[in-house]
Length: 637
Image (tube, rainbow, N blue to C red; front, side, top):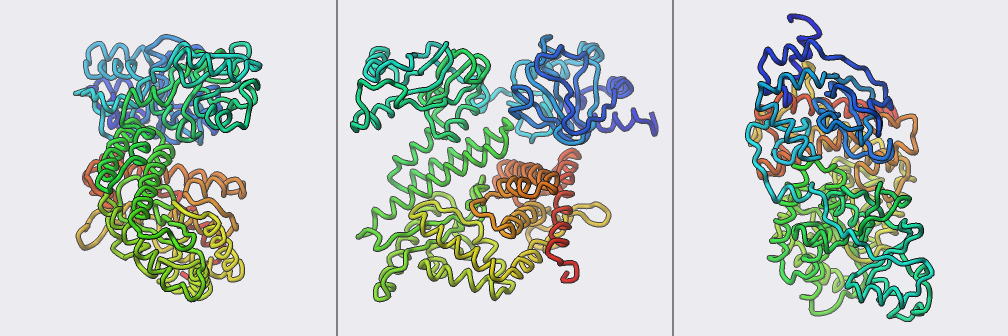
């Protein structure tokens, strides 16, 4: 097969399951019979209800999106080495999902008949097919990263705790319902008689609203509405609906996202089909106590930092499960960030209780860095600050002393929980980062109008702040002041641009990884400094240059940039995809090695892993080229 297309296909497939457990002769047969398909962006491979093909697919280059409800709901992204269309082939039914190229792609089409012949004599490949049919997740058993449908399946060790998140949620199949004109009193009596905490309002068996015990407390017990009023006057509408095969993970994320405690289950997952069930937060808790909702409730009940430390360890287990089950990294970030925020808020409240007096003026606690961007998945060191309302001049020293004392209590608790003290002392317990509103305004104005290397570095960290607790107006006023200073001194953006270019794309001239040349991490790859931060810095700079407020996370920034700069949409979307891969990769490495995941031993990576990382570096090069041109930086480098 030397120097043939089949040889190149053979060389590609041999690194990915189940092809890695085939004999060379078996894989040669497959490689010689592969059909190579080019797919322009938005081209469908197959659609829902389409009759199944007599082959399945492997992604060679690009990305294939798997969609529910035609092309409306993205449920998975397949990239290099990923297999799709396999379960439908085994199930022998029509496709229940659609597959479409979400970027220009090349896929390999492999005959199902050919594979069936081979697996009759290859037990390991047979295990792969059995496992893929048994679950609708990419890899419920392996600890390896995404990139294959299943990792090496030589020993499938079932892990009950991790499977909880991907199993179908058990919901009530007898939802209690009423009509729009049913009185609130009648609805409450029905709920009481049936011993349920919710009632769904339906029309032609379709859900149009819901009332829970909480609604009765808020609207009836407070006297805002009469018990004789119809239920439509207090119902929550529209309802959030999901299909009958909703997983525990999907349910948890949906409840967190929408801040609700009940989901309506319908025949096709939309509000336009028949109601078949109701899924409550209690149902999720019954399945597994270690879920986001239950953990946040534990946080709110915690009385000590030691208790919060115990909860944060559970969060790490939750993160491990999510990563293993290949839940989208964006959702993982939202869930973990929400829990981290609740933990920090509880640490602040416990510290306030320890103070002898209430705060003398209003204040806000700010998370900085990765927590401020809602990208802190692993436990890292603290980065925080505090802003307090301008006190009367004669009360300034006493006021600042109060907040410094409060900050010391909070940062000590966070350290006990597991968030180590910042080595650079960028914490609210440092007098430099515990300032009045006017002091913060002056501080930022100085950084922006008189920039130097240290001030640029500080501003990069402090521009990623997020209010965790306190008075929002203080933070809004501080933000307005910052944007005002940037607007009056735009050359500051050029200095930020130079800083954003300090780490070039992490490949050498010969396409080798740029690694550390000395020190503790010699010959290791710094994924944070060389790959993640260039994307973070670029997004921050571009969002500030567009005078866009309220977009703190890297992905949210690029999404907004794609909206306001449609001519660069493809570039920004490629940055989002690269960032997601890098963030997941760092998280996996951190969990695997019980570290921050920052430094990676390249020798421990498979060829596929190295290729996946290298695939993320082109967007870094392209976004840095855009910055060079936009801010005229070529002559300054």
